[in-house]
Structure formats: C-alpha cells, structure tokens
Length: 415
Image 1 (tube, one colour):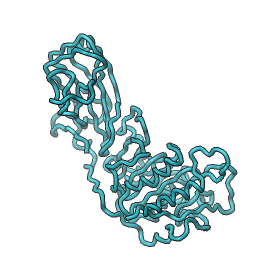
Image 2 (image 1 turned 30 degrees about the vertical axis):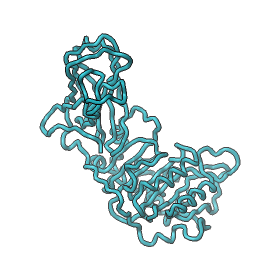
Image 3 (image 1 turned 90 degrees about the vertical axis):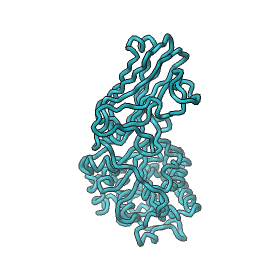
Image 4 (image 1 turned 135 degrees about the vertical axis):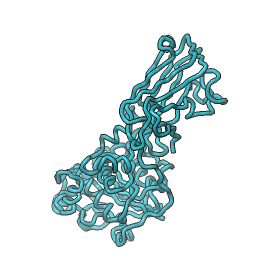
C-alpha cells in the first residue's frame, strides 16, 4: 500500500512532510532531510502520497531563510493510482531559476486538479549545480479530502480459490484441442466471432445489459462474448476482476454497478502525463453505475502489461482483455495471456478477445493466426491450466480473404 499522509477530519489545510517519501535521504539543501546520501544527486524533497480535496487545489512550498545564486529548481506534481504498487506519473513540472525564487520570497504555489481514487505528491529536484541553502522547508495543501472523498479501503487477499460454475468441464480441452461445432454465444467457449452469433438472443440480451445499440459490430461482439463467457464459466456472487486493453469503459461500469471490485489497466511503457483519477471518472457510464458505487468499486492504473505484476498475483477471480494484441507482438501477446494467469486465483477465469486472421499469406499485423492460437492453448495447457476448446468454424457465411475477425479465448488457472 502507498504511504499516505492525511490530516484529521475537520482540518481544512493539509500539511505534508516534505521529506516523508524518503525520510532517510539527505537533501541537496545542506542540513535538511535524512542522514544518508540520496541515490539521486538532484533530490531536494518529495512528500508522501496524499489525498487533497476533490477539484482545484493549491500546494504551497515555502523555503525559510532561502539563499541561492545559481541553479534551476524543478517543482513537480505527481499522481499515483490508489491501486497498490502503482507507479507515479509526473502530472506537472514547473522550472524556477534561483533569482525567480528569491524574488518570490522563497514561496512557490502549484495548482492542480484532484480526482477520486488517486494520490498526489509534491517533489522538487535541482537541475545542474547550485549553492541553495535554507534553514527549513514546509509544504502544505490548501484543502484536505473530506471523508466522502475516500474510496473503499483496499483489502484484496491472495491465495483463495475461485469457484467454478458447475458443468463447465464439457467445454474445456480434454482429449481434443478443437471441435467442429458452430460457435455460439448461447454456450460460448474459445471461438471465432461470426455474423450469425450477432443474431442470437444471447447477443441481444448481453448488449442490452450494456445499454448499447445491438449492431453486429466487432466491438459489440467482443463485449457480448466477455459477458457471456463470464456468465457461463464463473460462479455467481461478487468478484474481483482486472481488465486490459480497449473497450474497458462499459465493462468497468457494468460490473462495478453489480458490486464487483475491479482494476482497469492501461498499457504504457513510458506513462504519458495523465491523471488516472481523471481518466477513471471520464470512463464512467452513468446508466450502468452510480457515482458512489463506481468509485467504491473501480480503479484505474497504467503500466507495461506485458510484464506480470507481483502485487496482483493470485488476487483476481476474473481477468479479461479486448484488443490487447494491438499493443504488442504476437509472441508478446501469447506470453501476456499465459503468464498473466498468475494474476488469477487458482481456478480463476481469464477471457481474452483479440484480432484473428485466417489468411496465412503476407503480412497480418498484430492479428493472430490459427497456428498462433493453437500454440497459445498448448502453452497454457503445458502449465497445467485449462482452456476452452477451440472453434474455428464459420457456418454458411465465409469472411472475405484477409478479413480480421474477433476471436475469444477462455482459460482457467490450474490449481
């Protein structure tokens, strides 16, 4: 869990320890900070994570008895998702020269917007050489979060077993990897998406649950497949879920409105300067989930999804992704699917929808071929997981040569 500093209820301002994030690190301001040299020679200070009030906030940094003749200070507002283990993102950087800082009386004001389910910190580093000196340093936010600005406390234990819905074994790989039955959303398993399925009652009912127009689109089939696969393979009751890739918003709102707890994850190797709290709020679909239930149940974070996150190992009943293959190579996606089962509890369910192409000739971008899908299934089975039997049959409607189709994959973690 992130170290968080919060003032007592009823106190308007929120004072922050300027060295609270790294209490042992010595600051470049001689005599301030901790007793040990900082690993970063540019370090001046960094506050612990905090929860300011929602909306516009002002952080006031005050250097006492400031002396500086050269050097540029880089003041930063940093944000971190409330998800445990989330990385900080630099939200705002303001450079100030020593002369400017002296002219301001050693006081710097940083304005920023604060959102739910996110922590904020103030930091400062020196750019280049400096002779900065000060007798003290204080940092304060002008408004603290009210009690109703806090989400539900995070308490997601690992190691429990996820129950399976009885009677699903018949849809899993036993002796054969594939079968020749027509794929259907009424009883989904690992299968290609086809126009026929978009005319089934199961498709229409699933899309209506999401308040969407029941058009037979790639995205609608993907959303309907995830809903139908979870309904078929997962046991009833509130679940802990993690979703990746595109088309997250309808599923986060829908499942959050049903009392499930969720983490949505965006992929980024070098996170852009965006606030995950703001992004999370913009993704809410009011018709599917109230504001209170949404922020109590749903979180958003950003990281390189090609790597498993040890913080999440064994914590989720259900994983899903839509279009995550577009963020990586085929080999990386296969690893993402199979290794990502580490995030699921033993017996937990994973549902992945990705781009599939039947034309083996020429370039096919990030889409997977039948060979790729079978290799992914065999790799998952070799690690003692379960896989829904594969169905590649189309029926009477044959897709155009080179057409990219959706393919849904069902896996269940062994153990």
